[in-house]
Image (cartoon, rainbow, N blue to C red; front, side):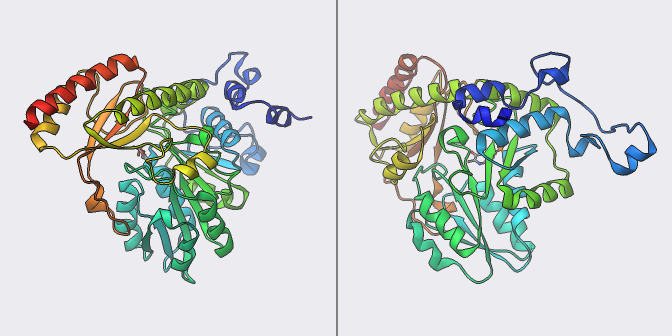
Length: 394
Ligand SMILES: *Cc1c(COP(=O)(O)O)cnc(C)c1O
């Protein structure tokens, strides 16, 4: 039995400890260090001409990048993985691997907003037309496909609004129609939704979020199944948008504790979401593990867990009251990105960047990323915030 076959029977938690490293190649040291480098020397003319050896040039990979790529491929169930400097670059390299001029693509209306910007600007300029679809229509997305449709782009749950689509139904349409299915899987990670086992062709992870876990890193990972691995690798090589060695090393470091941190994020996220759901100021909790979240039944059927990112809708209140709530928070920071050890909150309104669906929540919307602080302390911080909100509403 090969080493990979043996590992196949191990749990994810155990595999995270071993994946992508080979101490024997590193003089016995446990971790693959940061290899910095452009030039790789070939010992002879014959080696140079035949490009023998595992490495040929810095942009094509180093032992550091190969460690994270192979570990991620193992976890995601992929044939190959490429590492990009940001999560958004992981998305754009995925899309550019699958489209050509004259194509039409189907993109979920609830995608990460910069994905939409890329489709509406660069892809449009290159002659690729985008139709946004309501992700909750499931199999009916087939009716939107045209003879020149090449991609079905998915994101689950929806960015900011957290609706969970019927992924198996959507993936089946992509299969039937011969479309490349691309999934932005950043929220769940392969630990809570193994993308390629589910039939996704290309999966994207913003490593900036949970893989980093410390808000000190920008990184993207794009993985592909056997059918799409060659095209993904060729497109990545053509752009040479490789991630920096220090960032890849930090991604590898984050990988070792990803299971532990994600389970804690889930536990903390649920504790905070339940506490918020019971507050009189809160109209609705948009968390996939809550029945109040559209597509909750699909989350329950298809996902192995929930992470620490979710939204709430407040009952209507004046903007000054919302500002009083947010401005006085001591433990929650206000800022973009998420998945770090520290809790964050942002107000949002997706009405202006949705076209196939209508965002009309009936009150101010807030997105929370719950960190590793004590849940009781976080609740006390929000409790004081709600007192300020009520006072400013009077
Ligand atoms: C943050 C994020 C990205 C982009 O990651 P960056 O590293 O910030 O470019 C992509 N998709 C989702 C769902 C994200 O949350």
